[in-house]
Image (cartoon, rainbow, N blue to C red; front, side, top):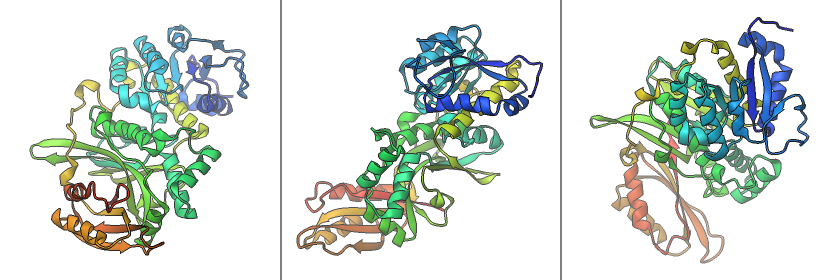
Length: 444
């Protein structure tokens, strides 16, 4: 057994779901290794959860129990609170504010809370010289927060992007592998536990947007601006789109991306989450299943790829305990705690949202239309009038006379505003039977 003269770091855990129990299992299984690397032991002294007597597979009988999780922040025998409850507001936020306000450390896996209230929590942490860590809030067990905050600190990042939601990536890669349509694969993902009973936050892109807002703040030294993230999910993607992408040499992935560019005399930040066509040679094309991956591009480091399990009790618990080890190493030295978002909140920049209309990109467009004469001419006329140059066009054969058919096209590179204008010209057309699907092609 590893021994140390340092007093153990005493922690309280709020939330004993799969991640909370995973943290306890990890601390017990790797106790000696963790003590050696942290320079002191890490000891759970108190817990709080919904049901006190539920069988969770871990012994909590020797630990202090608090029915009101907020009181964990008031205990004199607690150095760090681990918040694993979830929710952007409510008890999780109250506990986090209370813990940091009392000068206690806070470790959280709560991406929604950090995306909406991270700057306010960071200000409380800095004012009270309290460590605030949230590695587990983004991409599970992948050390991307630490990688951006520390590993790329000497670089001017030009872009941060990646696959940040395992549920969407599982659905898209299953559609790719099986040829099944979205609804069928989503139902199977729920059955297997890859998707929640209500998967809205995942499939609509909101979960990925929370994570992107956090990475943007760290990577670019900006204040979090979740409301400025442009978000679209994967619910419109059909098996036919997957097949067409494959024929063109692409796969479809939900991509979260952020970059800072000059617009006149200003630097502006563009953040968006959307399904994209990804060329098979791109590093993100081979990321399948529930895996997450993040790419950071720096002016001296070049392209960096972080990849691994983006969720699950083991990977997420690993990130939580890694944060605890960081705190344990520097717990007696306030100057080593550091700023949660790379630099102090007061020095974070306020970048206005960028206008995407002038961005240059190629685009895949898919229209669901009535099978009748003149429809194709109507679509191509709208493209012509909006200055959209068509690279290739595919019209699927008829299933039956007068039925619904798909028209797909790939544009040459051009301003995004031109595609937007073309779609506005087609809006309300009785030739279209559904909203068009717009999939940008991710540049290599």
